[in-house]
Image (cartoon, rainbow, N blue to C red):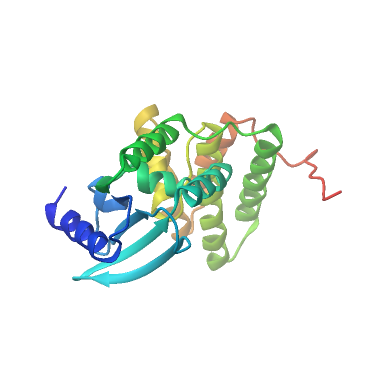
Amino acid sequence: MPAIPVDLARNLVLAHFPQARAAWLGGSVALGTPTATSDLDITVLLAGPPAPYRESLNHEGWPVELFVQTEESVAHFRAAERVARRPATARLIGQSCILLDVDGSGEHLQEDCARELSEGPESLSEKELRAMRYEVTDLLDDLAGSHDANERLAIGVALWQATARLLLTANRRWLGGGKWLQRELVAFDQVGSTDFGRSLADGMRAIALGDVDPMTAVVIEVLDQVGGRLFEGFRASGPA
């Protein structure tokens, strides 16, 4: 990892949070996959006030995302994100470079978050799986029935996301947003020697050129792995 971003991040923490118990540099920079627009994702652990917050700023030419936390707020966000299967906090800490560790909490939380990431999310319930199969089936039918090019693109984006979520969660893999969803697909492919990340992206490119067949084929392949299409017989109960 380049030394300069790490040193900049550490100096920022020392200057602005002298009372910090620990701090981590996460995100693309820590993973060694930065782009020209990557920022420094810095999580800071405090013993108490101020209340947890997130702040965006610029520091010596770098955009910075600050996540100021306490142990209680870390636990709160990790629990909520486990339910959503999008472990943003666990990623920022578990896949990080430790910038500061005054009392051992930096290493302890890093190891705990890394363990959570490696264990994966809970299995989908049958109710969740049926709802996701229905969503993908419905979008697939919308794609097949649409004769408007712009509409097909919009449906294709939603179908790509829904299919990726179904594939990953059905296999007890974590989700992500934006580029992170694609990165999770790529990681899944690397483990299982599959090619869904490329196939779904190629399906989107084909939709843009007026051909829905490649996307249809890969979506059906995913559906067949989890029980097939689902429309007739699907029922979702409302609130009591």
